[in-house]
Image (cartoon, rainbow, N blue to C red; front, side, top):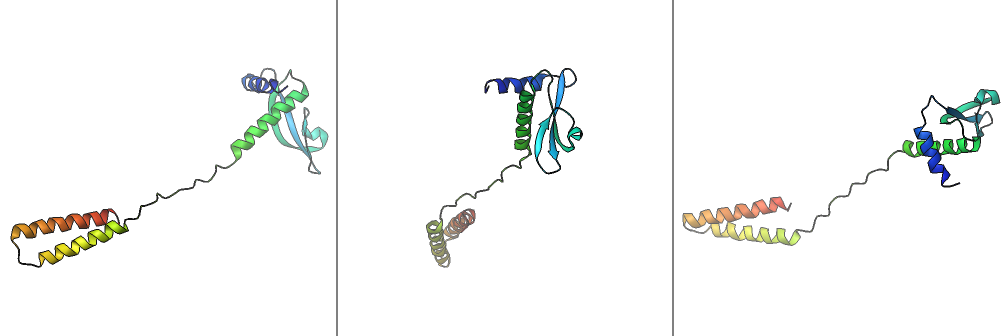
Length: 140
């Protein structure tokens, strides 16, 4: 019987709604219970919970199985998607590099206060700028 259900589901999907298609009603009684019926729920003094189109030539039990499969598929589609968890990338500790850059900048500042040639002063300025750029880049 387990192998028959997928075949029946395919038949239900492939069969045109107008030709040879029947309906199965899921009814809800006033007391709260539910049941499947081939007749309109009003004939059983119940409310319609769901209507499923099924192949007309199948026995009622197989029509109900198809209707249950349809109901289960609809329930999975109606579930809200799982919440997406965003994980932040772990940033490696740059503490040692930041301290090293800070010490190097202090040394260049100290060198720049000395009477040096303009070429050496320019070189110190370039080195200091590179170190500051690196500090900014790694968020020191």
